Image (cartoon, rainbow over all chains, first blue to last red; front, side, top):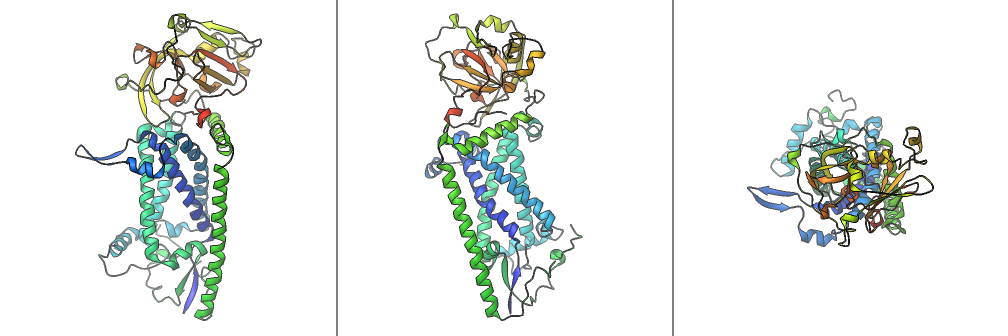
Length: 236
Length: 268
């Protein structure tokens, strides 16, 4: 028999769906800024393998000559990005949601199993529960990336007043490169995230909108699942 | 906690399905409204009347950012300095205000102090060179995103303003009259084609120079001879070349690039 099981608290859903357009806008305005000095390339043995970004890419998206617009959007929407992120972190701590999100001692082994299974290299399905090891690592990593973007962003925004921050990051130029790499990281995260959401199907997607998941009850696999999802995480 | 998160109702699959549909419909409706509202908010934002090149709400936030940065700004926060062997010749990115109709021999720096009645004082390059010579090797950061290490030599803007009492309301040079300094400075090329607005704190920062030498050589015309600004507390757009006049002001002056959509403060 089916039953509805609460999965994502309302607050988490709001944080998630606010972050999506805000981060998109930060990446977009960041691209408008980056265009004005688009020096990053992937090189191997003296050859440029890929230039960030080809002219055709800029042209298709109408990026050129919008530096001022990009800066104005970037330095306004940065506030929403930071406020939403800070509230999210505060909420996960106050509500105890962090217990589901932080990796624990099982997560790395499990993440490996999940990866093999998802790539079709392993037959046995890893235990299904709120967040598996791969998800815990991914969602914690993307949060750390957010903190990284904030710090490297501040370092290039006020490199003299915040020299105490810029210098340990290796100076202005390296902080700018780190800020860029983190942004590429979000895009990669986004691609994998979307692919996984599509794979996981409607029930999972709906839970990020409506909060609940339809599950079979009584769940026969529940007792098999390791201790990771139990409420007292002495392991963390 | 695990128990409270389950709505186990002893009902048939059909009832569960109905409940799921009801909750989904409600949640998707709320989401749709929220998505439309944010799209509407975005449309509203980008269609607002422009204030110096960008929608006014964005301009207000940029100005607030500038104020906030001003609160944290301190003369003790210094731009990192670099060894001299790292210097390179910076790109000559702009030539606005550097028209050919210019005679360095008759050039004078025209300064209008804050003190009333307004008086214009003229200074020669030798007057500036008579002030203590300061040399710094810092990173010039262009608003486009590139940077280059440059060695600058000149007089501290602060030494100049202090010696001649330019920023004080009574034209005095004592510490007492430094209480009510002019809050702003306008610096422009002789033809006023290029102009920058500065907050007084940035202008008087110890690394802000009235610069006459770059990388060990007297300034060339394309780099702003005879006198230019060098100030690592700002983006390169504020390093005005070929200074013609300086005004100490109580109102915030216009700024060439801020009039074209950029941040007025443009501070580092």
